[in-house]
Length: 433
Image 1 (tube, rainbow, N blue to C red):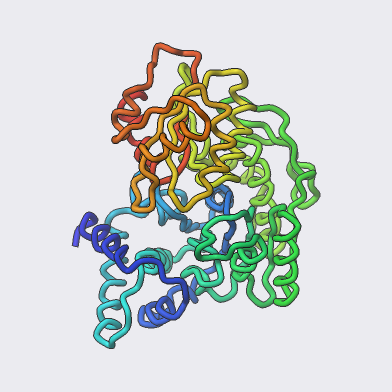
Image 2: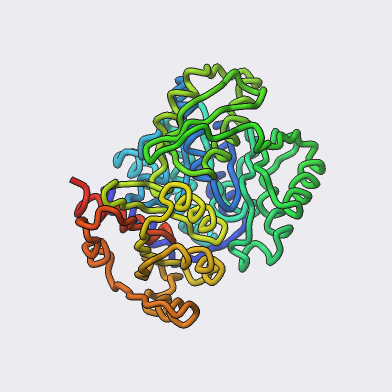
């Protein structure tokens, strides 16, 4: 099996759909020898901010000298991005070896009449096996969907549980109220856990705190007053830490946007917790890591004149944060919007934030069977907002439509991660010299 065959094999299991529950995952990992029981985890759940925060935690741990695994989803450009070791995507040989190992054990279970694992269960199993084989010190593990029945919730006693921002998303799986969704996500809290909680709406916070209390967990509430933005430009922002957990003052953060300052503060609370647990992490490690950390596809700027950027805001809360960033970084600029979204997302609310900042609007179809087709999105926007909208059937044509001579304009690709990953590849190929 080569790497192309390994990825094809994994992705072919997409046909088994989404199956929430831990029974299949438990059987597979038991057959594999339970590699997860030999690893230490920071488990991260939430609607928005999981990936950026996980990347910051991982980067700091790596810089401090710990062999660090990072598991996130989905990928933008290459499958290997989902499983990382010390901030580098899994090497092809490692991916093949772990996939073959998992495949052999799935075949044993299939012969016993057990159902085939889903794609996400397979990817999770491959990641856990790889991290075990590499003998990593810590794994920063991002939840895939929800928490309670997510395949990652197979782990037993994480060093830290992180609950990021919770909003209405995946309501067909997680519930139709904020409280129901918060319960699903809070359910990664185990007995006696140490939990770091990002600021939440009152309904969500009550559910999280009640669940934590039921598990005798210790809770650290992230306080927005503990961080401030001192300065910012399109390369870096300067933040001031005002909390008491760490001996940290002013520092630079490469990730841009107001929302990233709170994500960063959450990561810092996790690091403070790990230090109290005996991990050796110096202030210099934190400062170095945060000045260099990247998380592709999050307010990522490729060109400055004209501005070309992408952002994977794919629900209304993410879109709202994106619009705030646009107003902060590019006030009064003409914005050319390239937009595509999955049809099961809150499209109309997202458009209510996006359309007012856009001078021109172009729609695209994300590379997903759940995508709202570009032509339908264009019709929806035209009918609702009486604006002229054009649509593209392929990303190549959309990227080539950018006029590089109009240096004062801002060209933004925003929406589904299944769309901006393709945009990222073509922008770097066609526009970045």
